[in-house]
Length: 520
Image (cartoon, rainbow, N blue to C red; front, side, top):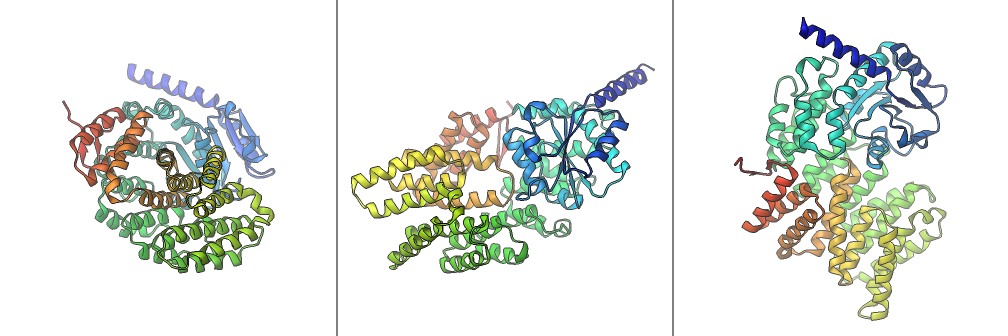
């Protein structure tokens, strides 16, 4: 009897918490917002704000418990990309639940990796039952997992993991079990228990679920098991997924990790060219450049530029990409026609700088001009000093990790190796925080490209070792672990291994890439 009484009391308290929830609906006027507001009111949730002024309507000070978001709220980004941006900017907290209203929720579920947040999807058109079920399930999860999510927001993942696993099984009802499993799997991954992730994802109740594919693949990737990754990518459960950025991301990531550039290009060529976004075009372009196929790269992007409107954002992005590859071609190509490369670059840059859209790319243009100044300066002190001053100013005004990579290499060319190194450490941190999408692959390629140019094979071990030390200094222990592992793959040095184990302990990672902390 006492047990039943306690359960009833908990249920009553939980129900009261539902009523106190703060909900925001970001939608268009006369759309589904009013309907959701009415349904929430019938459920006892009265604090529902309808926000019609887009993302600017969201004030982080309001601390909404649940945000219901139209996937078309930003014409330039998908709903999933909007969520990533809101999380990165701190407008959405770790304890905030999100329901994305979209045309086809199934595609989003299979094409979005949301490791440590509560996310659900609602397909339009929807019924009263659909709204009630989604909102009630999310409300339960927000309350039940709040201690776990709070620890996540504070960066205490080991505490979050423990808090999640101390929730009584009787409290995990059927409508939140999937959310529980997703959090459990992803927290297991984030705490470095990659083998355990693989084990959980192999269980009959989880295996083959679309939302379990990503952490399973990531775990095999972190374990360096390329055969297992390739096998997963060839399984029916993965092949059956609809085309999407997440599926393409992992296919490309595995191929690029193994430097199978031709296979990566072949895969991209199967992507519908009519719907190829600018980020995809830039990625193809970079892959061709990284494979030293400069003529193909320039022909590809020239074709895309011709199809774009002269003052469009796409035209500008592609033109900047082309100018960057001219620089890369000049600096890395053994060609005897280097003067022709510079002539092409300066002619292209001059024409573009006269366009109205060029104002939005002033930093990119300035970086290219610094490279031109370095190339032409030779050993003239006054010109080199001018280049350094310009780079100092650009470093302060730039917020793009890709551009920071290019600034880093410019510092390297000027002999400012410490500034180049510090910039690369910053990019390493930014890369780690990026969502899994095409932009991350682009940054990964550019970062690798610049890293290889700055650090020849005999210097890579020392570079990784020093990057690890820098991350430790900044208390970014998980990143330090990854850098030390990269160093140890090149040279098995005991003093670096000791640093790795110390960083693993500080990061609360008992396992990492074949290394295991002692249980003593």
